[in-house]
Image (cartoon, rainbow, N blue to C red; front, side, top):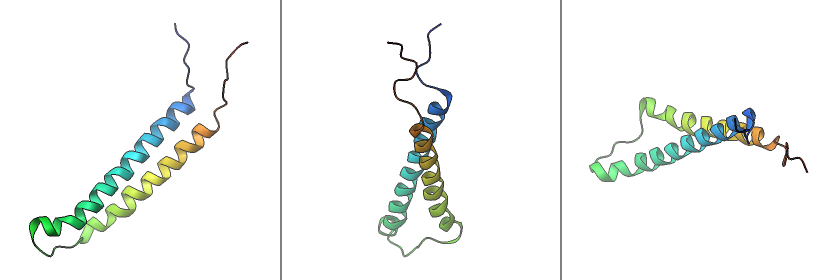
Length: 84
């Protein structure tokens, strides 16, 4: 059986960073669409109701996951398990 190169917390860190970046990317896409959709539909419809919750949800959760992922990866020791 092949020995794994990444430890469990490193895999979690990479997963957290991926999910955080995806959440921030979706937040940016939604923010741009919220600004441009008035031009697209030629109406004056602003962000309303539950749509305001998407801003802190997408950007906040994305930032927290990105931070947790960077903390998990920061504690990885470079070159562990290498026998010279």
